[in-house]
Amino acid sequence: MTDRTPGPAFRRVLALRLPSWLPVDGYVLALLGTVGLATVLPASGVGADLAQGAATGAVALLFFLYGARLSTREALDGLRHWRLHLTVLGATFVLFPLLGLAARGLVPTVLTPSLYDGFLFLCLVPSTIQSSIAFTSIARGNVPAAICAGSFSSLAGIVVTPLLVAALLGGSTGGLSADALIKIVFQLLVPFLAGQLLRRRVGGFLDRHKKVLGRVDRGSILLVVYTAFSQGMVAGIWHLVTPARLGLLLAVEVVLLAVMLAVTWYGAGRLGFGRADRIAIQFAGSKKSLAAGLPMASVLFGPQASLAVLPLMLFHQMQLMVCAVIARRRSEDPEPEATTGRDTGLATGTDTDTGAGTGTGTGTGTGTGTGRGRDTSAGTGSDTGSGAEAGDPGTGPAKPRARR
Figure 1 (cartoon, helix red, strand yellow):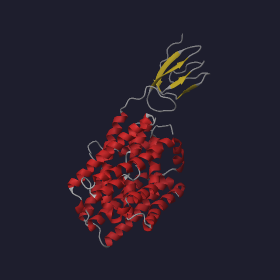
Figure 2 (cartoon, helix red, strand yellow):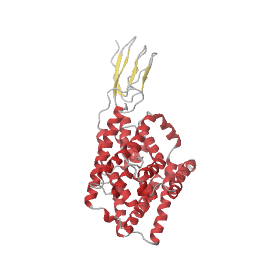
Figure 3 (cartoon, helix red, strand yellow):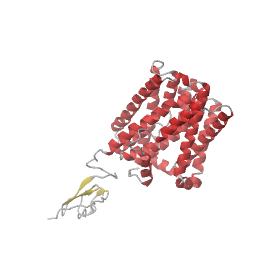
Figure 4 (cartoon, helix red, strand yellow):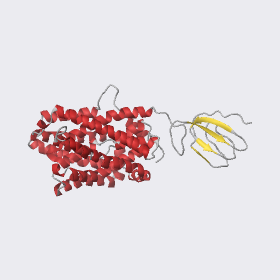
């Protein structure tokens, strides 16, 4: 868990960054277009039943793919960095809900009861995986930790989010009834476990068709959005939301995101985490997953899911834009002058030997060592000797001084 160099798979994630000329995420534009379509042409009657059935199958497919993509070995290896993962889980499922409960004082002057329910639901869903990896990699943080933290959060959210919704929003969702429990088990948990069990058989196929399956993921979510907002239009609940209320909701979410970004960054520093770990904690602990939240809302809220997911959709777009700026600024931070242990990154270090001869060399990489031996830092930036030494070999040329 100490190797933080992004590999080819992580570099491909960077392709998800937005073009500089596009102010919003292209997928969010597709979501907004889907909402517009549901507003103009909502599914009703037999069409609504067909759309609901398709959305149910899409949700099951989503969680099957989540289970099939999660590497069990990678998840077990990630347990070694348990303090970081507990910190992210605490931010996601403890601090976020506490802030959501504190916002109850804004009802009804700032938020309507329906919008508050959606705002609180936003605080209960798990963290993201893909965008956390991308932003952590851009900022030169601990990418493997971001992968595991996001995966653990999503896995925990299958169980924790419905329980929190039942405890904190039981009046709005009707509580965790037997019917709702059955839906959660068969639409979310069973497909996920099936994906884990069949990972060895379908893992290779999924790896070879990542691009196509990514489109299936997003298309499934668009179908869930269309179904939810169609139900809202048919039920006539959109008259409860005014532009002024949406503006106030957006302002509240700006404060929520700012608080979480500050707490995860400075709080991780107070807990003794290094820069790379703090970056992973900030990005994994301050964001919420639209991909996981939308299917859960359709299961838990039913016809009221449209208002329940509206705050989540706004927060999702906001977190992408803000975290993209933060990640680019973090990428410009200077590297620490000295590092210990196995830590990757471009750094300039000084190697010294003491004993029969002395010499110094500089190059890309760091290393320390003491003992009798000879200096071989030229060209590699590493030391060899008979004493105790530690350090990673460098890759740049070194210019050792002549020995006396």
